[in-house]
Length: 458
Image (cartoon, rainbow, N blue to C red; front, top):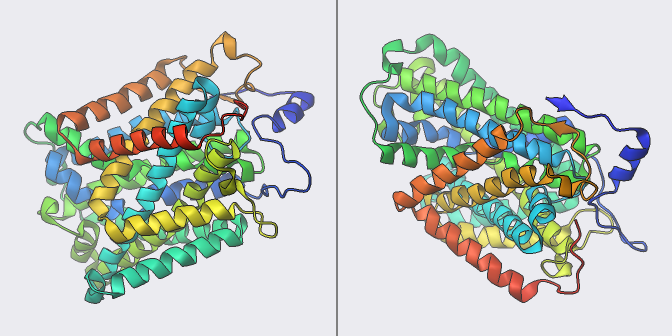
């Protein structure tokens, strides 16, 4: 990867590029995040509840080819993450892909990408908190139905909102701790379980239907999704143009290794993987006994809780960025005078996520989230190609990180996203309908709420 060095004068000038100016005594966001904080945020968002369910869902569609498909989707995700890395190395502000699309394609396209980012995070938060209730219901059946479930969902959502308002540093500490808490059980599962696999179960057999590949790919898009949040808190990162590329690459490398090994162990140890509702716990029960199964269940609960905290951080910053650029009412861009966090956007995101969680299911919300991510991926890969054109020289800062191979990797990312969208459409996947509704809803909101007097800030 090529890292371009700028002289001190250029770096200082670029430091303020793409950060809307603050006026008077208005409080500003604190830059307190480092590259490993961003990596923890990325890993935390990718490793949510899906990894504990994904091995069975993928195996049900593609059988023994599943571990190969997981690895291939990881490689495909890296092509998209590299595009995020190059685009992110040009920007300093909060918003990530929203800023990229806005600078490359104008205000409306940028808004739609930012809106879909926010919808993705809010729907994911709602879906994962439902998944958490389902996991806990194994030990506390009252959480399956009745008043206990909505009560706990409400309490957890409001607690996360309060933590998020209190400060980005406090949220980052919790995310760092919960990321470690979720990764350790998965590492135990992967590296201990490898000693107990039956290699014959990993040998691909028979043909797989295109429909099976398309369905499995949608599950894996949701499973691998989340790394797009890494550049979003750029306005709260100490050196975003260098730290964001590092964190994106590290995130995809780590989760691809973990997900592929988890699929290999589950497939190689569990005789009827596709029929399991808790594949990692069932697999761990076989090679590590009841202690192993409990460890996987606890890991799932920690994982989903940490994911919820991360969804609150990322989702609220998406909404803040839209309001900061005056694409939605400015009240959502208010910063707390003491805690220096975007408190109104945190509250709004939390309330809407709570409403979705109380009215929707894990599967339905996850499907909509997966499809809306693909819109964001397309926008960012296309923006990378746009920024390289001579017409953008001087309009956006130069990239501190450049993908090798010219247009090959961004174009590959675009083709991957289009192929998955086409496959989901062909299969009539429900996520397509949900994503389309969100996209149209965003366009209507833009027409009604955007400040027409705002400059098209790049």
